Length: 205
Length: 234
Image (cartoon, rainbow over all chains, first blue to last red; front, side, top):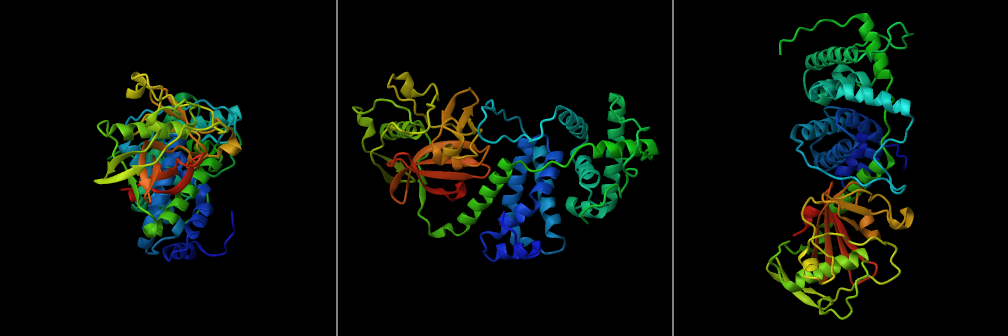
């Protein structure tokens, strides 16, 4: 990946002006974060991949509509989250068949294959999947991705109070789910993080 | 939506914090990164594509001419390297069809010769041709019934079986190297005979994004003449 000193805003402007490389650079810069949000908000890696690609194509085409009222990264996240939510809302049964792996090509699965990690992630994801999409998106952004409530509100295009409310309900629901499963971590263990709240993690504004 | 917002206990808050911490932030898989980058690059190419030759796709219909159906079949055979002895079959010859009201020349399409690096054969089933015992397995894929699964790497990199697709009924098809440039997970929605800049071509359309590959099947292996977005196809 080529490094480029231009700011996100400069890259987007260059793209609008016709620079054929600029948008690709922009995507490369934010790919991991966009993927993380999409994966945690969507049902599965395939859905997340579709959502990210749909979102990037949409952003590519709509770049000239960006008004600079938020950061470019916020704008990109908003498009990705909306793509995820749209896909979840409109998802219809559409059976597809995947061929078994034969050691060629690249799969959508994440590279880590440690069973323990996998199980942990399944626990987190399966619990998250039980939340309504909007609550899930808020929890993902604030609690997992470290966005501030205000930043998440800009991504989700809703008031900060709504994000707080969604996060709170989502956390309550998660705690209930995990407690019912007996999977809530032992609270007597050493805590490495402050209590869940709007400042759980420092993150992008 | 008047759910009472009871505060979480400090213990629950700490437990949830560790719960969230337990999942590392996933990194975008290389294949997905490449797929999206490919899609962006295709968009960039398409953005200035007004001067490019038109691509004309023949409507997919069972009622089209015998020659076109046969040509599509043979093209599919050529595409996938199915070694069907067609040397004496006059359906490898020139045919014509209509595309958007105009006549499109379909020059000679030949089955794949030896030396292709792709080895799997088409198994699209229940085509009229197969029922007629013509020994020709080509078939125009119905929309959405083919989902590519491993289109991320050129055959040269990943081996002859790298590029495969599967239908809901379990049929499979191997595609040549050029098709391997379609993005990972693209849904192949159609394989048609058509024309590009007046030259007969096989037009493969796929979704996510709406990609299309235009292949020159006079060359062996097929050569990509154009790759752009489906919406630019007539």
